[in-house]
Length: 477
Image 1: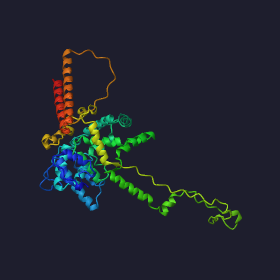
Image 2: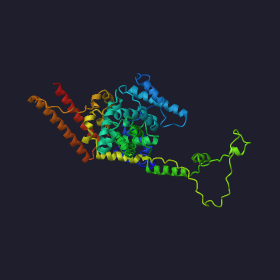
Image 3: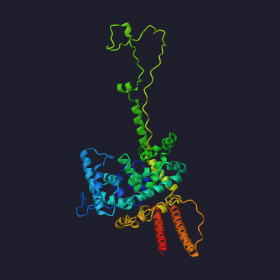
Image 4: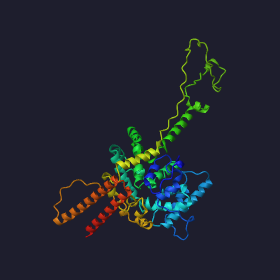
């Protein structure tokens, strides 16, 4: 059981990652572990619903609308509890955005904070929500959702590396995996069916770099390959988006699958009611014989039809073993649920075989140096401060790079450029090659020495950021 696991050491991230792959994840230790993973410290007192000393945020109307329809996915016991939790959620959201006015609310953000609210004590809710916003989902809190589309581009490339034929099939109906957008945006909190399952998913994500949400989303898409191929065989490609937008049936562990199978077996052995038996009978099983009115002139057409009793004249000549009636139709079996712990392990394996520095992902040419992909760290001192992180939201150009236009048809060779221009271009190309070489060297060194993967990504981001700045300066001059 999760409660019997020994408390992990405070600085052993590898232990946290291993623990997150077990049944129920961190279990009862979440209130202790999550704040450490988020680099959050408890506050001294409870915050009111809205601090009147702070100016209202421009997104508070949308916040109110979303909180009024919250606690549907993770329902509570009574309407009174629901109203109380909605009030607490609204107060927490308002406090976050009044404290950090540089952040922008996005629909689905309240689902993330709902998970924190239902998991952590009051003194930890605001600091953990603030750190979650600034250091993990900050890219989505700007004026547009372009950074999330950038992650979709990375995910598309990851599927191409993992299974090229499957990727080609998917891209015939959707050039980008838009069906995964809610999962990337809300860290799966909008779609996971139960609170324990999404808490376990948060256990997994919070002890890994932010880019792992792409790996988990990809692992889930890869696991649905048979369903996608079946739709293609049936000519139902138009249903692919609907299929992949919804998560498969999930259970936490293999033992949960066996428990569900036992429940199904019990349901199938329960005798059917009279009503259920009547529904399963075919319409022509009992055919009444109508008496000929011509032989009975006293019977009119308004009289009810008469039914003849079965004749016993030829009973001895009949087959002594009559054909038994067909058995009632069995209920259609439910599809076997997928196991969350297996999907988490598959995401880890995918990261191992195709790390973020893999050249085919093109991560460094999609996400900029101020993306959380590069600024997050296991160590507080290596991350931007809260104020710096809030300001980073304003620099979209340093968070995600625009997707390049498709290549134009080949043209005739252009006239040879001057020598001076050729030297400049050569210098830029050499510089780009140098940065790429350093990035690859950094990633290889990190892999061989079991160092912090996030730190290596951050170093690559800094190198790329410096190179972009130098290129811009040369273009200007």
